[in-house]
Image 1 (cartoon, rainbow over the protein chains, first blue to last red):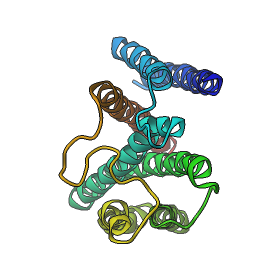
Image 2 (cartoon, rainbow over the protein chains, first blue to last red):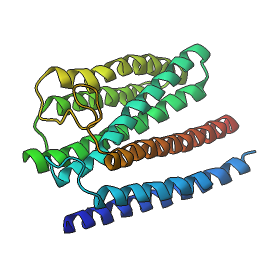
Image 3 (cartoon, one colour):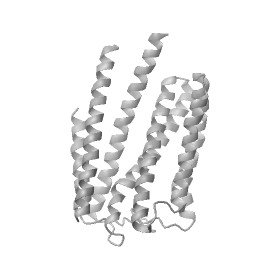
Image 4 (cartoon, chains in turn red, orange):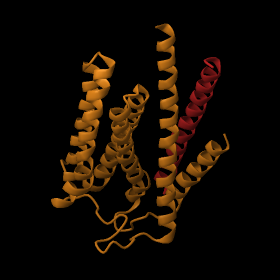
Length: 37
Length: 218
């Protein structure tokens, strides 16, 4: 069961990291789109 | 903005449920939890290659380079999800069969699929004239997708394989999963699909900006 919690922590960390990265990219793309209008 | 937060909360909930509820297939054990991630990744891989083929057909009809950009973006994402499905499959193989790679029919067919789409990117990289590259890549993408149903659904079922075949439905096409497993599994399938469309939309917008910049520089 301990292995499950380690895997859970790793999977959540990967997901949170990916989400934060995607939100940053999204924000940057939106800024560039506004600039290029 | 709100839908991204919904995806974040739902995916976090799905991950927690995937590791804290009983294992989906008791006879396989704890390693069967990978099923919540591996099958949705394989599904998104097929979906992305289908989207790539649809934009390739559209490019051949309209000759708009934006459609070629979209076909490329979908193929890139399909390739990434194909690698992810291969890696999670290998982890499952190591735990269950004792080796990361066994040249099982399912492993061999996904390896061939990776080679076929790897050649798509090599083809694109080898051609300099944009219109020619887009046209040839579009034709290649259509033919490449024709192999996907055979490699993913047909070939692995034609020969004996170690790969579990009754994870979703049994031979009578009845669901083998209990209600809780079904909810987590289909939730995961939907969420991975949503993440794919988010990534695809981002890639499409970046390609559009790049194209506008190139037009401005010309």
